[in-house]
Image 1 (cartoon, rainbow, N blue to C red):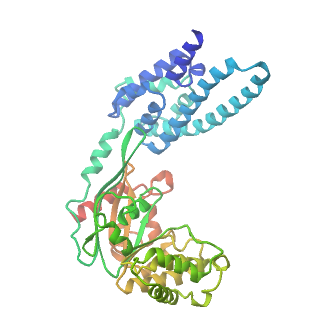
Image 2 (image 1 turned 90 degrees about the horizontal axis):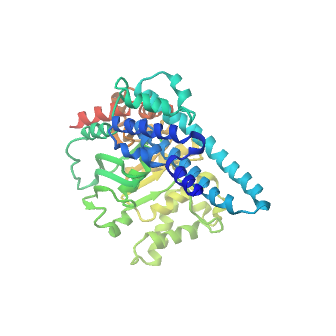
Image 3 (image 1 turned 60 degrees about the horizontal axis):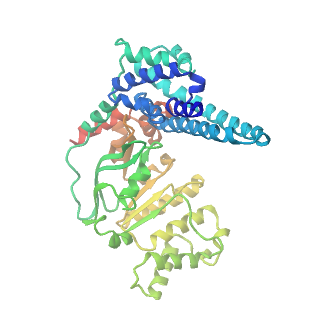
Length: 452
């Protein structure tokens, strides 16, 4: 009977053995009111794990809340396992098991301490209270005090509500949609969502643009802004609630047909080191070209691509013997085999020095000049910015959703953001805790009004 009661208390209060039943109950009561003040359902306070996550949402620390809730749940699970194993293990093994148990709990406690600081630091900012409140928040035995005071005292009100953020940012959506182009890429992305941690999460929202043929476009955005998610939605790899048309053809409805029209070069190179350059491209031609293309035509296309990217002198060399720049050109050549109308590259200059990177981007510029659309992600844009026509800037808004903060020419982007360098533009839309200026919402709103 005693063991059953201990199990129930552990499930209800996470760290009840440390907190005590009464402080745990007070903490849940205070959390219930905090959640209600932030526009969430108070009963989340009764559910271990979910309580921590929802509290982090109130603090504007949703990503941190995932780790915060998982460490709490893991600690509870280990405690439950220990209750059963510890009571049934023999005296010879109990010592070893206890050491393992203590190491696991200590590790989880250290991680949880770090994220406790982050979550309650966010709550302190939201409620506008003094930083010294943190001392009470850090200990389980006293954390119920700020929870009760902030929750039940009408003097303390959050600066914003969780759902208010989403509603406000939804109102900032750019009106209408981009006009469909007969020649070029048209993207009308309404949203891209996933379900995780008890709710639907919007990864991207309201991204509309038309990119003409022959344009080389830079894709900018801080970490987590949704650059890769956006590219995957555009090429159809991860479909969004969107209309994506390339030269008037729907990418989603005619995906099999259009897969030959899109070339996507990921950051990681996927090539067999023991193959020669020629054989690597011949294999790529078999995969990337339509089935009705003859072996002779495939070989002619491979020779043409090797000529374009300067790989003919090393066509018989093993891939593992190539230089970094040659491997990059080979990786790009594999996707260019199908002569795509849309060419997407994720950090093609990664690991290259300035001279080699410049040569690579000059080659991409030549490809765009043949009437192709080239979209590139790079973390060092300013050294090659003169080669681009346009820039897309994605920013993570207050609801942690990727939004369009700018699409247009390079020069107009400088005027819009009032910054000369592309890296300064990225810094302006990054969150302050990520080393940025925290102006994402401001620029998303400004752009939405400008295109309305």
